[in-house]
Every structure is written in structure tokens, then in C-alpha cells.
Image (cartoon, rainbow, N blue to C red; front, side, top):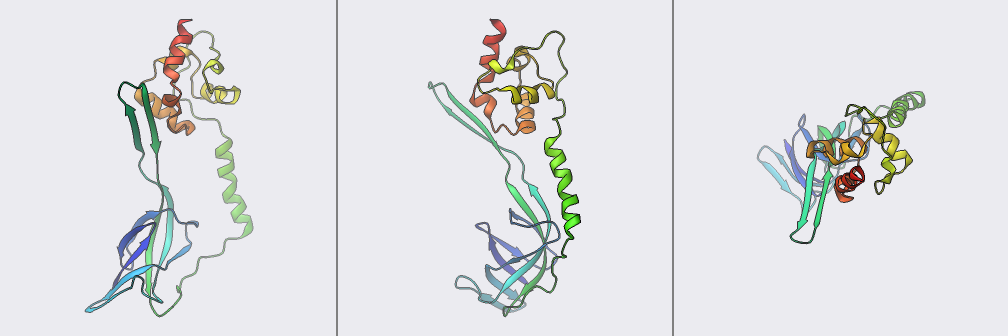
Length: 210
């Protein structure tokens, strides 16, 4: 038996024990998700097609993991206009394991196990600690005095400290960024293309030459 369900604006052919990756759905690992938009059901020779949905049919799935897709680079350029924009995007996804295909308005037989309040607090604590932790250094600290990175447009005291934590201390380092360096800093600080959007490399080169 299999079904065709719709979620996140896309259609999926599913059967019990299948694992699918869909657009992000609310919930935590172990929760039971009920997909109510069933377009078609097939059980051997019996095929039922909805108009557009099949009334009383649903698909139950266990939420295995909340994940993110591969990074996609969006690059825009206008010739002879000095316009270049580069942004990255990673889609939020949910990984589901199909447990049941239900008809006649039935509800999933398996329920998500209720987590004790103490367990929820303990699970949330590492996430807070991770958010407050300093970024891991990506570059070796250069010899000599550090430059005032706050002179780069958009860099304040807080961002300057984060850049220092990554090992970035001088204008020369920023001016010499390669594409890989820009991507690494983008990912580490969730800049979403800010370095190229604000043209940090040109700013840093002028400051280094001054």
C-alpha cells in the first residue's frame, strides 16, 4: 500500500517504513507528524484518487531529525553598473519516517512520548551554551599590532570581537580574503553575503594603504 501526499507545496509517494525529506515541519525528534493532504491511495488493484484530497485519509510519520539542506549560492550581477550581490541559502528540512497510512478518519496508533520538564530544560541548556560560545578560530593571528576593524563600514565593537575570535585582526587579512575565506566567515557568523555586499575587501585595502 502506498499514498501520494502533499506537504510544503510538493508531492511525495510514500509507503510504510519509507524515509523522506520535506520542507521544515514543526516538532522535535520522536514526534509523530500527521500529513493530512492525501491526493491518492493505492492498495493493490484498488486505487482511489482525491478531488483534490481524499476525505478521512492521512499519513502518520515519525520525525527523525530537523536538518538543513546544502548551501546554495545566489549571485547577481549587472554589467557596467558596478553591481554584484552574492548570498547563500540553506533550506530548513525535516526528515520523516513513514509509520502508517490511515483511512476512514483513523488517528495514528503511535503517540509521541511526553518528555519530562526537567529533560526539556536539560536539552535546551547545551543550545544556549553553544550560542554563547566564542567562534572557533579560522585563521592564524598575524604578528604585530591589531588594526581598528571598526573603521570598516558595518563593523562595531561586538562584530570586531567576533572577527578577532576567528583570528582576523588586520585590514591586510580582510583585503586578501579568497572566495573560500569569504564563505568560511559567512558560515561562521551567518553573514548571508554581507562581506561582498558591503565590499569589505575594497574598504580594507584602502585602510591598509592609508
